[in-house]
Amino acid sequence: MADLIVRKKLYLIGVDSAPLWLIEKLQKKHGMHGFEKFAKEGMLRNLESTLPPVTAAAWPSIYTGLEPGEHGVMDFLCIDSKYSKQLIYYDPSKFPPFWDTLAKKGLRSLVITPAMSLQKSPSDNVDIITGWPLQPRYSSKELEDAAKEFGFKGEPEIGLELEKGEMSVEQASKRYLRSIKARSELSKYLIHKNDYDLVFVCFTETDRIQHYALSLDSWEKSVAPLYKSISDFVEWVMDYTAKEKENSMVMLVSDHGAQPIKNKFLINAWLVQNGFAKLKGDVKTKSASGIGTSVRKQIRERVMKIGIRRAVYNAMPGALRKMVERLVDEIPDEQYIGGQYRKIYETDFDMRSTKAFAAISFGTIGMIWLNDKRFSSQGIDSSEIGRVKEAIISALKGLKSAEGDKLVIGIYDGKRYYGNRNDFIVPDIMFEMKENYINDFSYFSSSELFMEPEINRKGDHSRLGIIGLVGSGVDIKKMSKRKIAVQNVGPTILAYFGDKSMKDRSLL
Image (cartoon, rainbow, N blue to C red):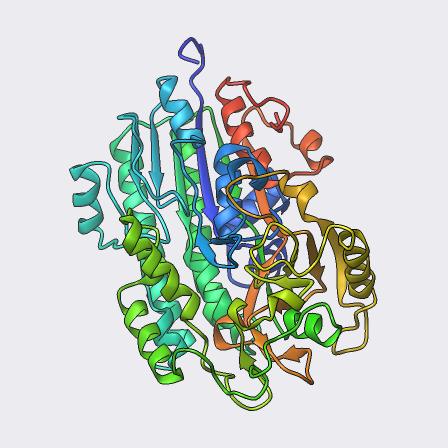
């Protein structure tokens, strides 16, 4: 790469959870000229995410060119043989991101808040501010001082205030907007000040606001300003490359999309009602079991105040990590406990009489595990596996939504998707919900299968994100005809700079 005659540069802007439908709906009305330029001068189209389409899995696929079954991150959590949830996260030392690969070739990168990339680069060729879900860490004093100068502190952690009603969605939007603008100005300063081959700036605030806003009547008022600010930064980058007469490519990418959520499907309630799973005898009659509801609430508030979503990914000693994992398992959403709905946990199942159960995934993709010999309280023997799996799949295909139409639009084999893994137990069945629906494995009702989403589930993920390309050396017509997925992004960046190590996954 060092022998290139004409120097190339690449600017990558990440917009967490950005769907094409939203950008197309908002761009003209709100003057989002940066996004409009992509559509007119290059390519802006759908990008297929991972199964499930979740930040924890999709961004590592973007960084590495690997599928979840290869880099080993299926979600934020996985489940072990004792039915306990364990934390999993992307390890860049095992699967280097594209900026570290480029660094070994002598290319210099600026990387600002890459989601799920929580460690500083081992290379001096990478200036990095680490991203969500941790508080930012800086690869140099220069970066830290610059961040302070521009008032950038990372994405605001304001989920608890929103859920408790202490902050409105509109107020949250203004907080998120400030952090977007601060990140943008910091990035402009560093681009001007230093000479980089690759610049990657990732905005995660869009995902957070969409979870609270998309199914509200006033969603546009809260969401549009964030996209407008990011579009302004995109426009600045495109104008900057033209002014500097750089031989460059600009890319726009999201890890997955987003959609308003109107209803939740209670998958474990469905499994129980259809005889595939069984709860312990006292679960249906008690309003809560184990640790008391008030104590659970106190734990939840205490943990959220110290930033659980960030803290759990810190480098913890083993004992502390286990304690936090226990807290994560015990934290419920209190809104619907009581009445016809109640919170259930894996410990509430009579596993010896349970053939299958759901866990981990809350979104548009549900995950079902057969309770076979992989688990400590096996409820199904090897001779039953095929029959039970087919029975569940057949029943899923016949499911009706609350509106009476088809609920499940896709069914996938978990073992085929993830392959054989030793570090976590893969789901046997994954199923995709229709538009505006998500599944929920954590609530139970003996009579209902659907439930109104909580405040933090007013919007959720969808499978289609975005990819945009504009600039030199890009055959837009060729790319517009092929299917593009998150694992094509990293290899395309490497190929742009002459590295053909993953040419089979590159778009170039």
